[in-house]
Amino acid sequence: MIWPRKARRELAIDIPIWERLQADWPCLRGLSGSESDRMRELIASFLTSKTVSGAQGLAPDDDMRLAIAAQACLPILHLGLAHYGDFVEIVVHPGAFLVRRQLTDEDGLVHEFEDILAGEAMEGGPVVLSWDDIRPQIAADDAPQQPPSNIVIHEFVHKLDMADGQANGCPPMPASLKTRWESALFEAFDDFSGQLDAVEAAIPADIDPESEAADAFYAQLALDPYAATDEAEFFAVAAEAFFVSPDTFQRSFPALYECFSVYFRQDPVARIN
Image (cartoon, rainbow, N blue to C red):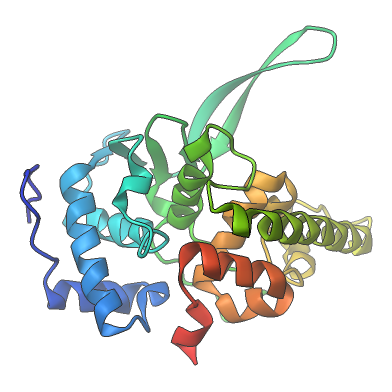
């Protein structure tokens, strides 16, 4: 399948391909007929206007492009592709990738270090993703249930957040929603940070918090612990849960769920009931 750049409107992704995407990615299920039609058109437009490139020897095939495009389009289903207008390229690594960072401390000393990332959204630049962290992972039956995750949604929601030049958990939105949003987001962020502190305090001293032995403790949380990094990461992680595990997210953060539903113009809980 080829998606050439064209000035005219693209044809929608055909129904068999869409049904296969829904089978592979549960977050795409439950859409109404009109929403499904809109998603098929968005995916085609996304693949025509964006370039999906490989890194480290990876050559993205059509299935990879479709998987990325479908998940990236879900948050903008009712917002429109123009919300992704500040970039063209998506770079896909076969697995987690290293990024060199520089940090200047309070004394003016510059520290260099490397981050191991599954994804990164660059302001005004590309979205970078790890394919190993995109494709579905099958967990062992006896493994602790982990909070929901979706690296594609996470990084593309960061793009929405960066639209006003700031990654602060508050993307551009009508003033009528912004006050409610900020109140709900900051309250949920503080509440989750407190929950994380309590969980970490309960981990026995002989268990490494970074080890698999600690997974059962973190599984008590509604979100991945990374959400406590700052408000921008909290928004991105919370948006993953909004689309991937909406019932749990709504129970845990009802006020924030309502704000997300208004902003994204979607009610994912209704799709699973």
